[in-house]
Length: 558
Image 1 (cartoon, rainbow, N blue to C red):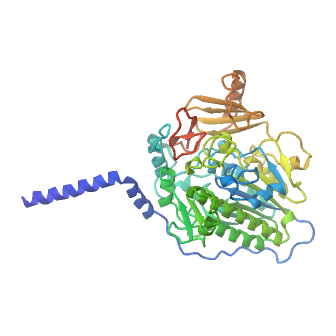
Image 2 (cartoon, one colour; image 1 turned 90 degrees about the vertical axis):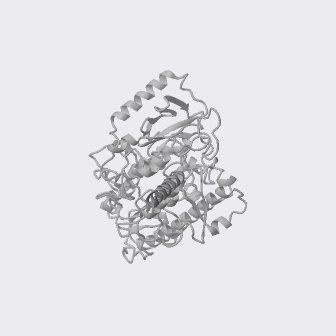
Image 3 (cartoon, helix red, strand yellow; image 1 turned 30 degrees about the vertical axis):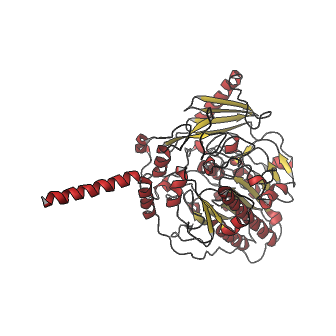
């Protein structure tokens, strides 16, 4: 009898335990996630390779700095008359790059999520040409996002578990497996071209293009690389006394990030170590040191902080400086923007202090538009759409170039340009020849700014993520979402904010533009790995609130 009593008690404990696991599966997931975080050593100093002690005689090639902001919304800066919280967060330093150089008012991201955009910047090619179509994400992340419907959402996401078997070997299990999803080693990156012309090449911040053999920054042409290989990082530890956090409890993306993101960097493949202070400050501290170290030789810098991507974490001093913003989440977001702009200003100031400002081409853009999942509605105004949609709000970003004495201050360039143009523009500034053995989709924009080239750099531009594909031809833009079997056609010349869908009345144009998509797809290759997630993203309102009846949305593949 006693044996049966003990067995019954054990069975009861197991049942209670299993019940708790089922009802608290996210808590269990977080505990497991934290246990799998990589080891992080204490902060260590970084020593940047010193260039010549004195400047060379005569003219030297220009420095080139590419600043790529993460998830910057079109309306997050004050240049266009808007800004966060109605202009409560001025962005004078970012704005100055356009005011003292060129503003490409139709500047486009290569994709509506980050990694394919970064791949296009590095190669000058549509990422679909080499199969880097989706943003690398852990299977656990895609499973969590793809199986949890946000309360009040218009449709449920889908997780394609049956496709896991088609993932490349070594990419599905373990905390670092996602970093094996990489740009093919056959692709030529812009730092390799710059390095061949005698440039010191420097990378700071987010990489997200792989870290398997042959795909890390220092293996793709960068002499020195300080940052993190995956798609994100904490800005400070969650409980740091100097941080103010804002969480989005409705959002499975946010719920995944907090327990899974480490606070760490590495330098040229070193062991992981802790940054010193707030991540954006730290990366800028080191970028400023590297500018000093390279003041007397040409350098190429790829500065790509994770600001202002989630997790939403601001420095307390920046948060305290914005008491007029009453909404906590918006205030944290604005404080992050305040910090980012100040750090861009520190880079600009260092160039002037070193006397090399006039001999430096600066290019600033974002990897995609502002994200819907932070729950803020104004970030991409006046455009419709958010990150993960190909509406203008998802792919239209600030796109600026500054080069005193070469680019006329206050220039406004009206025609569409994009991320693919950064590669040939930087190469031309350095006097580097473009690869002859492959299609380069970008064009050198400097002749257009100097007035020696006229017209449109691109008649057509393309975007694709699985079943969702888009073409802009002249001023006409066609979107097709295959999962919904829906078409949108807009004449951006008269309808830049995509209000009037003409697909039903312009059938001949729809057919012609579909033919353009078909021809472009014929030049693309099969994705390197399948999409495991298809999720709804509303076009006119962010997440975190019930979707309005009849609201338009797209289905996004990743």
